[in-house]
Image 1 (cartoon, rainbow, N blue to C red):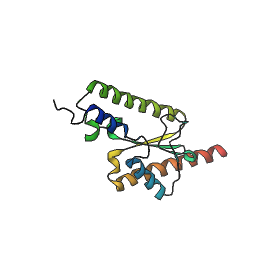
Image 2: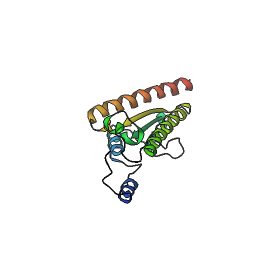
Image 3: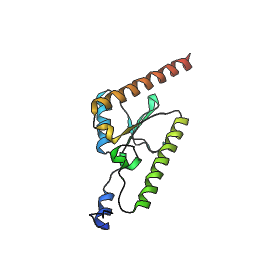
Image 4: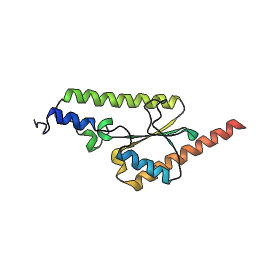
Length: 151
């Protein structure tokens, strides 16, 4: 078994510096969405999961998840810590279950949810295409619903 190269104090200090908002992947998505002409609200505390990007007019939410912290099935997400395994396993399972529950709540409230994974921000052309398709599709559906209810 490989030992941690950092002392518990160093590891604690390092982990305390991990941010939950304004992360590099989130900033990539925000810039991309802004360039596409969409404007959004950030980190709404009144919604389950405090979504990273919210488009209230179109009832759209985008979460930008870190692969490790939210248990993605890519290499970074599957990489498990070598020490304190029991703690980390329960922590990551809790995070995944919380994410699922928050998305269910948001969908019941009428929001459309897209999850962008940290690893997906590496290929910006593919990311742009995926986000654009989702935003435009949901925007059109929402506008059609709004027009039908207004008749």
